[in-house]
Image (cartoon, rainbow, N blue to C red):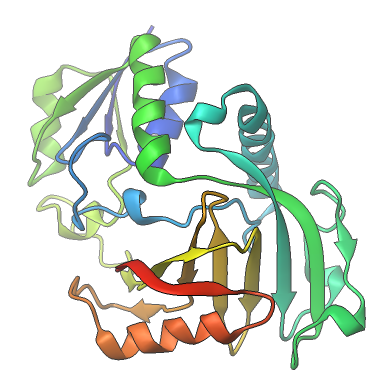
Length: 269
């Protein structure tokens, strides 16, 4: 049994721990831990969050994604307290054909949408079932589940990866998101930072609307009377302050059919 230290307590670090802890002694170290007061210092609490097959995935990566989806799909039924829910996804592409979609036919209730169902300018539309979750509920739930299985969580603020040596491990897994770009003994300049901004609104919309291409936009219902609106990607930007102009741009989603929202915004991040 190896002693493994995982740096990072976000969804990536905890997912890794859920597998490795079956046969090894696992400790997760991080500055921010699930259950903390919400902060913009880490990304996981602010995710949409929904399962969507990633473009450009290798066969190995495709299998890993489908295996992960199978677990989440099952948890949506066996553990509804996790916030996981099954939901319809309407997945639109401005410039792709069906043969370019690796997950075609592999998602539940998959079908290619008719031409009269497509928004203007869309070349391909697909409808299928996926899963959605609420991070501020799911992350603490998963932490408790891991702790019950023997995983230890420690609050540690690291400036270098070498500082983890004091944990007494055999293996270190770095799951610290953008951490490798700034850790003093790594400074990985290939890590690219991407800033997103979303608007959290009250809505009776009960699906996921995802549009890829020139007009990249999304609306993610959490099936709790709220919806996450987004579609902003700003590369190599990290300013956490709210951009009011971008908020207005994101809010144009409220005029998209069939997404309908009430006027009251809950949060804008």
